[in-house]
Image: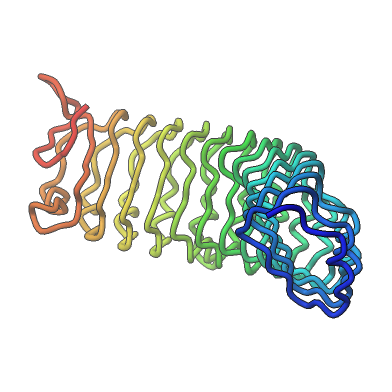
Length: 335
């Protein structure tokens, strides 16, 4: 514990400095910028405060900069000289200001984590220039504006988190080209419009073919569930609840054979439960309550219940009252 001494900058041959998960406090030494050989700097999970020193930009050999889990404030400084940087962890701090558009010049970045700060303003279009980026975490900030279409240029992107911000606008159809994307968390914002058909792919376009988790809940999304989403055969967790989605549940959803969780409650869905959902033999939780679904639940869908040999342990529908909207003999909860 205590402060990290400025004299640490005298260790001219230092390559890796690992002081993470201790109880250091005080500022980050400005002398770290003098370490010409430093490639890995780990100061995470301490009680460091103050700001990220401008001098960090002089440690030009840095590959990994890990400062998460501290009390670091102020704005993110210029880092444009860190051309070799691959991993940047600044999450869970007290950073303010905007996301620097200059990040787009750091084309070797693979993993960027800015979650749990107080960052404001839009997501810069320039982030679409980080051609090697695999993970981008921007959740739990105060970001505004719409999602930049330039993100569609990130061919290696696998994880994108932007939940719990103040983002709005339509979901970009251009993102349908993100064929390596596996996790997309956009919940708890103010997005409007419909889910782009291109996200599921169509004919010669593959769409988000590797997508496993799609979180769009608690927005203002309307329109219908695209039939093209049925092409996302690796989907395991589909969360569309608490929106204004209308129309019927497409039968194509029965092609998502690996689905475990499907939450569609609190929308404006109509029609009947498609019999094709009986193909979802890995399904564990299904919530479709607080919609305008009618009819009788197909017997084959009821066979998904755990007591019938399936894995479904939660099944919620509007099946309560003397004249329920849906007849369901296998639901776990009726509303």
